[in-house]
Figure 1 (tube, one colour):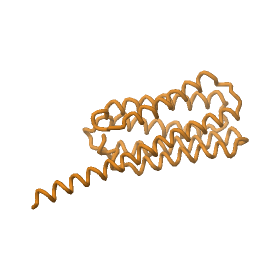
Figure 2 (cartoon, rainbow, N blue to C red):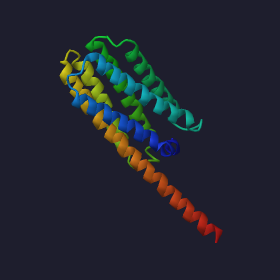
Figure 3 (cartoon, rainbow, N blue to C red):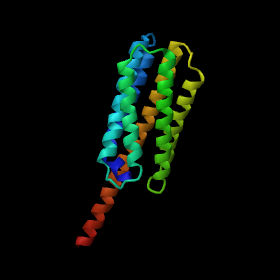
Figure 4 (cartoon, one colour):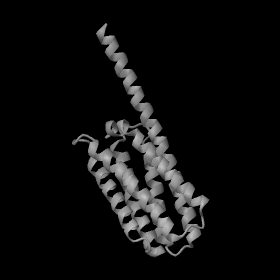
Length: 193
């Protein structure tokens, strides 16, 4: 799993940038309509799902956590398609959809951190990202009748925080991949002499 993540760090960057952009849009256009918010969420969830699915499908078949990454991708794509197909759903339905999606994704991220705890030195970042996702999902279920503006800001804040966590993880994975190439190259060079 770690090898698959290290080789796909660019996808984590794209997911992180998409999350931050989604959050910034939510803050810069707080008066957007519910339909626009749903469409923003649909695009984000679908893109996030595609990136997770690609990472899972391209991982070696015996990689721990590969199945959960594929499932997370499929659920993200499904959430995006459902939100895009029914843009006039009520605020409560949207919040439940987003809440369920965030709770599931958070659970998968925390499970992934535990699977990688022996291979990744900063798995705490993945646990924190998963915890933020679950907390956000629970908040969506506890207060489904919140005003549209507060919902937009809550979603925007979550998206920015989550995106920053993904970007931080991507940078750490890129460095880890580079460190391994350096060690391997030095070892190979030493053996060849």
